[in-house]
Length: 421
Image 1 (cartoon, rainbow, N blue to C red):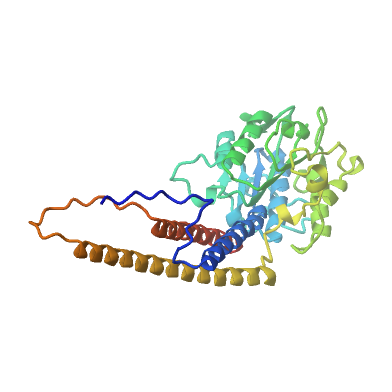
Image 2: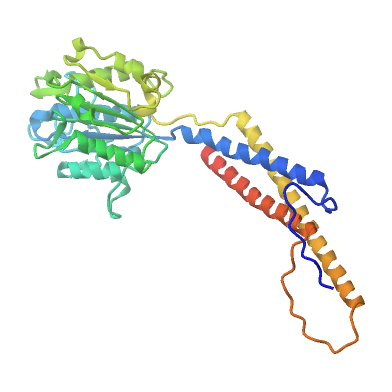
């Protein structure tokens, strides 16, 4: 007699004669729900924090009478190095070598103060783009990483979506443009589009953009990408003024905006443990000191001015320090690993039970066939696919779903551990 085809059990009618105890199934489901959710939630916080700080420092002026612009950028370079950012994470662009200029009364040196207490050039300086390499095209290619494979790592901005970047620029500019070596210029829209490409390519977490030039604030007026704090030295139709000159050198040695930024950084931010914020830095700007109206833009930052002002100065000027994993996360991780071991054992047990059940069914089928065998000439029997029964369908479903969920949980654990490291 033909065996009737059994229908697959519905979710509202589970087989009552299943070999697997109900408590094992329920326990497995509870473990999966309790393990998978924490696995992905724990990975979240690590993605929200930045893990590296980079600096792109650009002087766009050549010729001896622009000595102060080179001193501006070298002063910022010295500060970020003092606060721990290594040369491997600093891109320095200098279009002219004032230190070796024949007019320099102090060959091989660059100073930003008339007392000449600190030689900014010194022995420990790494210039990444020099002379005619400092162009608009190279600057934009640097930001967007649109460079050839032959480009050395020292000339690439190897950032990712967990990198904070300080972008500092100084030179001669005007309404929505900054000149590069009196030969070409970069516009406000060019800069805005470059930052947008960086955001789309997940090349930064947050950017602090600073610019010291005439009508500097117009250069960040077109920015539209998120997580950017921008500040400049002067408003539309305002000049950016030098601070003082060195009579022996014969030219101005630093601009006022950069000078007072450095004064704050040297006096208030002694090391990476400083709690001074960018809000404190911006509050130090006054017209009496700078002789122009320095500007700040917060609206692109998530959380607006309140959240942006809370960012530490060292979040951009200093190296990432003191990365720790607290004991609470360590205990959670250990507990998670123990649960994963127990889950793997449950999966193995389900596999064993399923194999035993299938073996029992094959034996029962073979015994039934042997008992009812007729005394006749043997004939070839065509085997067909065996329909799923109430007994083995649910077992295989549990085994498959559990194995798949276990793999997902292990993937979540791997992502979490990677984020912590």
